[in-house]
Each structure stands twice: as structure tokens, then as C-alpha cells.
Image (cartoon, rainbow, N blue to C red; front, side):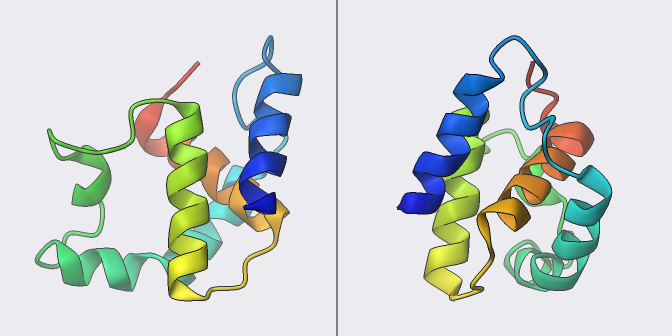
Length: 100
């Protein structure tokens, strides 16, 4: 829960800047490839990216993205640091969501 509040605080502090601009999208991609792809691929018949591109995706805004990353981290016990979550958010937003 603390991680979620930290991410939301970072988003609100940089409201005039691009969301997640403090994150490192390249580091987020590496982390995503290592820790997220296998689970997503298993859930979507081998297409890990479908979780982000499907018509009925759950994430609709920046706070939803931050919450989903925090939920996955907590539920799967990945023990990611807040900066890891921010990096993942930067990667996912840059690659798939394009929130402004």
C-alpha cells in the first residue's frame, strides 16, 4: 500500500510533466521481460502483450496503471521496490498506454 501511495505522489508531483517521467522505461522493459512476460503469456495463450492491447483492458488511466502494478507485485510476492514499479509504469506507458 505504501508503494501505491508513493507512486501516486510521484504522479501528482509531476502533474505538468509526462506521467512516470521519473521512471526508466529501459530498466522497466528489462524487468517486465524478466518478471511479467511469462505470467501474462500463460494467461493469454502465449501473447504476453495482449493483456495491454485487448479491448476490455482494465487499466484506463495513470493511477489505474500504478495500482495494477502494485497489485501484481503484492499478489505475486515479487518484492519489487517502488523505483522498480515506477520503471515498469514508465515502460508500459511508453509502449502501450500513452497516457499524458
